[in-house]
Length: 289
Ligand SMILES: [Zn+2]
Image (cartoon, rainbow, N blue to C red; front, side, top):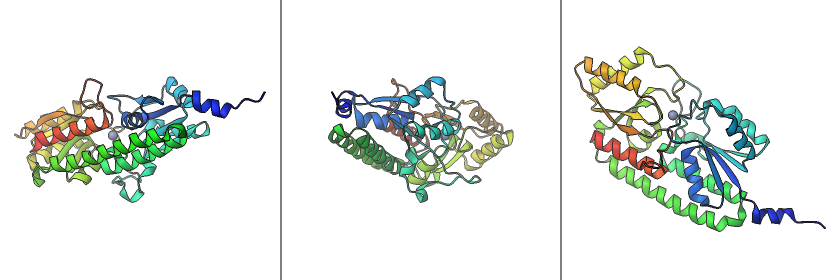
């Protein structure tokens, strides 16, 4: 007897989606609810630039029905593994959802800035493309996914307005955001901040004493009150900047941690994308206004 495996599969199979970053996983989980199994490879506090695939990750990727990664070399060490996966399963580069002319070009390299989640309007494009891909994967639950996705996008539009309102509390000339690495360029472009990172767009480079000295000089010259550490990056280099600033007679305080390339853990208020962005904005505005 011939059995109809295709229709059996659509009723009994639980799909699995694997994402690299926690921001992508949050978007997927919000859309799929409990209908799909979601694995996130790079959990809270994990630096994607330096992350290397573990054996367990390769198994998860190979068993996935859909793989979603950020792209633009965010997952530096894993890029080749991810690109190679499309021989086995459907793989989506999330940054492909954004028009190339809206991407920030890195200064001295022929590369784009990968930190696209910090401009909420750009991130909405990413969420829309994820929603489409999920519906193609599992059309049986399309109505539910569409409803969840639309509700999430409405929340993201409100988040964008929230940021615009909050940053207006900071004088234009005080809108200088100094962080451990250059993750906040899209945030700066979208919401009117000058952004200076001690390290470049990736954390995969050495920091020289010259870098530390130049940033310290800049802080003293601009009389900047606060610099910000990031949860996924060691603090020691920024502490060196702070000491160098103090040696020149200016005091710069270390602001609360910002979430740059990963969400916070479950006990933090930043364990969702919306919570992460709100935490960052509230922290920045509180320190600089
Ligand atoms: Zn980064």
